[in-house]
Length: 423
Image 1 (cartoon, rainbow, N blue to C red):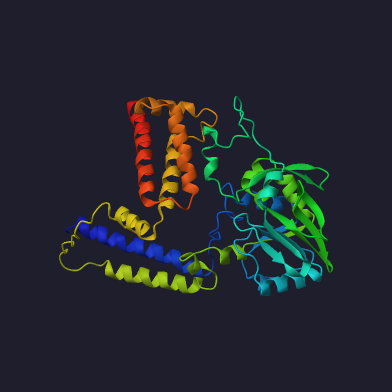
Image 2: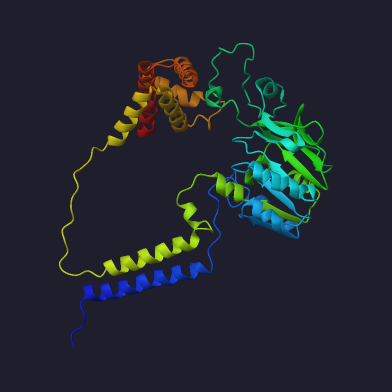
């Protein structure tokens, strides 16, 4: 009896692989793995800005802690009044209709904790006359900021034009970047903490829980039979904060809402506030349709994989220009006259390759070898980098000026890479 050829055996085994994946898809109608919302700072994320560690802390310290992904207006109809609803830096804030449902639930005895998202911290609760807004320039200057001491460096405050290479990276910082402030709290076990913020809470009748200087950062206010806690920053709940010792004040802030035993961390606002295309297909509403489509595509692929006749030669497409993407991006920036964006991106990439952040306070170890290869003075290179950083923030830079700066920066980059190749 002749044995089947190797190709026939492989095609026969391939049929079992298709059947295996089909058996995996069918049970997804009954059980589907819990996935994140798409946001990097939600309670599913294990990144530095995520809140997974704090969620696990709530599970450990309470009788019951759960996540909510159902729309708030629907979920509040089944939420008990002895539970605390936590909106920790949501990707979007509640709509007027959702605020109406939330405040009605709080007025009947519910407990709410809402913290601002540092990317867009401005929101308002009109019924309570509470709002959060960005810190203005004067308030940022008067904030008691905690700064790390730099050995062997004393920056001049009077002469702003003095070249300080340690501040090259700071020139690219945003005007609403987070500040590490020394905060005072109402919590007995943590009277003083490091609080990262770029906003403040405006409230005249609320009880102040956390303050940084003269700015209110967290307040508590009664509303009907319930309580609301509003904070200007959610960084205290991040995984990085848990590592740095912020677990106690973070839990005390949630606990101050008045219901320390049952917590609900809302993720519906993160799910509906982040941009997503594929993630919409696995939403509980559209999930059955998605699974049916996948099963249909799998069966179609199984059917089409059964080959008949000779193998057709593949059609070879003409080769494209390998730099077509760069050409298109350059043409778009040229049409829009947006030279500053290119210069800003080039500077950030150059600073990252030079590892200036790692050598803060010792930038001469990076700049001196480059200056030696370019036969220039280190002070000239430092001054040029500062000038380029300041022009990257200006909106009046011209295209030819931007091109000249990038060419000069490219020489610095080439000199730095030349040293790596030699080593």
